[in-house]
Length: 230
Image 1 (cartoon, rainbow, N blue to C red):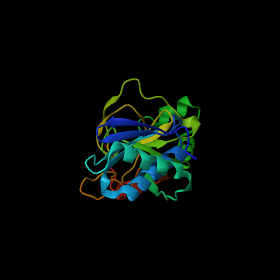
Image 2: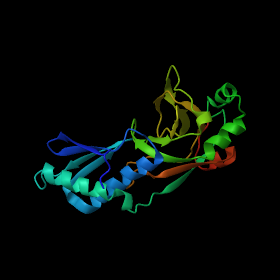
Image 3: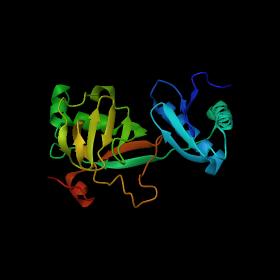
Image 4: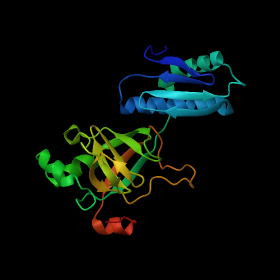
């Protein structure tokens, strides 16, 4: 039976958008990823692209080969079977050096929450995060959700420069800055592994719906893996 929370609208002459739910969760993210996989598998080259977000999927299709009525019918058919679709997600482990020399807000966050730095590291690294969305910058993955005790508002004044690999928290989400950029998230560490390379296929080690876990490492391992300390 079709889930009544699914809504399908025309987005342009060759695109439709599917809304799943207003609730952001790991389960929903994996369901959206499964939908994308099933649609691409079923329609192949008729699908130009499927752009995923927290609660929706924008489907761009070959309008000269399939009309909007047929694409909607196919989407509805997949949605009715979505709970039965088997779709495996990857779990990626990322090395994380948690220290104030690469995480400028680590000590401040610990003090504000009446925690030790070790507590912050434990709570952040023991969680398994879902890739909710990818955007803001190439390779910037929005991961969630953090342990509620770590949820922290964005900085009132964003930094003009955040180092590549910076591990950060904003509200209920965490992320790794894939390149040097401005940013207003709270910095707690650094990941020495590059997360975006346009020369690679695919350019990212993960997709929306995949899982990410941070593995604490020591300073010498961070340097060995290519990490830099300014």
